Image (cartoon, rainbow, N blue to C red; front, top):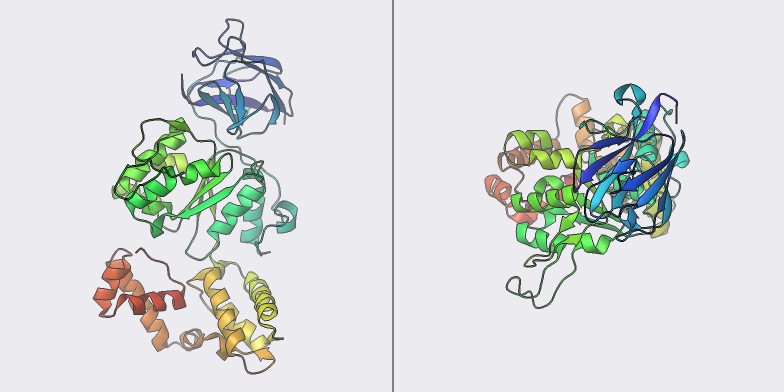
Length: 439
């Protein structure tokens, strides 16, 4: 750490939440005793609870045989090295370690103001995928992706909540999995749930579990996904679809680290890291009253933006060739992409992003009659027609479906009624165009 920076602890849950403590170099005692460097007046904290050894480069923890123990990112431990963003549990309190420029810290005193520390932005150069994501299945070498990979390497080791934003089909879940695989939690479970696939009550039961008899059909206690994740990562895809009740309960998990099973009275401690993703504009939803502003702040401590495929340039060729190899290996065929096909793929807008590209390559591998994949095999006639200045019938249909979904606020059943077709037909067309929508 540079001389112009200081390590800082901030209480984020429990007694005196919001208080910030600047850590001096040397031994820092945390506890209730008057001699403590960081004094926490809470009954769950021992007089001499734990000690930190602070140097300009690192912070190490040693528990002092405390009554309630010390935790790092929800995992009980007697000794550990702390990284910026790690969550230190001291009794019932939770503190987050951060690094701040010395100019923003009021001297070297362990007492501080009430401003929340910000996650520092690294000035490291943009990194390539193998440097930060070994073994993680994300392909890309374009400038936007190299920037994303660099951010992944810096954020993965932190314990803070991360919001992954991007269009449908752009690979948000892969980014969340990379965050988990690169983190100290990699040996613990990665648990994912699509919030758009479950209605309010069912989603709450999935997340928090339920007690026997909590509702009709609850014949036994059920473990929720938060409990199943343990000290790992919980990934909530399409978090913008959460009901108001589920939003309030998730906020409590993030603020106090507590949750209850549906129909239960006992509170439990959440040890997992929460990762979320959405293709929706949550700030606009806040203004419309459809999403809690305080929850948005909690979810977006760090935001990662996944670029759309159309902004990734040569990555389209890399991905198409990768998908072609994988699909040919699975089907036992030997095919290559022609120059004509690669040009057509580069010129296409890809509204469904990487998911749509993979579906198009799969279609081409199935329908190809010769050893090379031609542009016509991909079903991209609409792109060729648009290039000539006249949209194809398929493109007009896609636009019409998108307009109907917008009118129906993403509800597929309502959109099908507006279009005068049955839901199964609409679902089939949505899948073909790589378009996601609500139930």
